[in-house]
Image 1 (cartoon, rainbow, N blue to C red):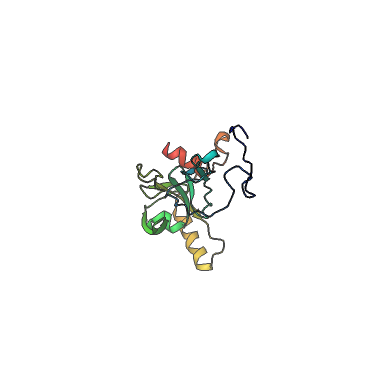
Image 2 (image 1 turned 90 degrees about the horizontal axis):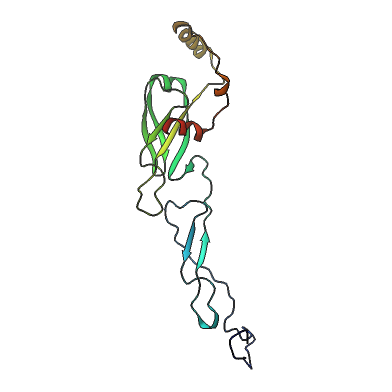
Length: 191
């Protein structure tokens, strides 16, 4: 009787007297914007049916979000690295930054340094609860050095080098030599 106080004398072959049978079915689940890997969705009443005609339990769906090839996520903030050529960072200029809503124009200020990070407020992930607004997009500049130069380009760079004051290069202190990752550099800048 399994503690029920009565014995089923003629059980059906499907449930063998338990009063329920196992079956699979497909459910459509609405995934809210801004959900992150490891978060769970609860589907009330979609779990295993209750014993002796009791209510069904809940089904929990654990979400795994696929990594993006360009953006990295931390909480609701997104991080990316934009490669730029030397003239753009030295002279400034307008570039296009990819966001979740599409490409957006952005003005690079004159004398931008490699590793400098710019914050685009409200361009990150939406808060999954819908109450917290959106995170930010943090864009870090990476200066690209050309691998091949033609004669004219090389001559122009040599002229630039000759016109600049001689720099005295100081070695980097040992405790600053370990290379920091993108997240560590951005945390140092924005706290």
